[in-house]
Length: 214
Image (cartoon, one colour):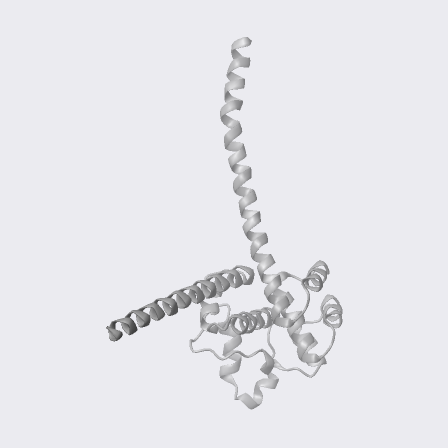
């Protein structure tokens, strides 16, 4: 009996670090996801000029994260408070029906791109390609198409990046919180690289100037 107790203790000693490691991995995953969402919410607030507190309130009304930009985009274009848009959405109306109620058509969601996007953008852009611009007001987009287009417009305009870059990330299956974090990171690295290059060019110019004086 004592032998079994000793073996059980040994087993627990070896098992405990593994369990801790598993919990640590889960916590890291949650932390990374929370960080992406935090960055996403801050970017939405900056772009649509709304406080983060308001974004959290909208989210607590059961509006999915990817649809938050849609709420503020339509509210801004319609000139109404986000609460009015939320009420209609929670009442079961589609994004196109809500837009139409304020005189907005599919034309406001269009984003010019250079590529010919595949899923999930192919269907949405297909509507615009099949019609002349004068007929874009007749286009009826699915909710998913509106969400994809508004987030495309939001992220590309907010960071000044190519819409095609965002599309490529979305085609790989990334959600918009992750895409926002990646684009922001790339933008920061590009800015740092440009600053370093400018500093290097300045130093070289100084060196050449000194050489001429001699």
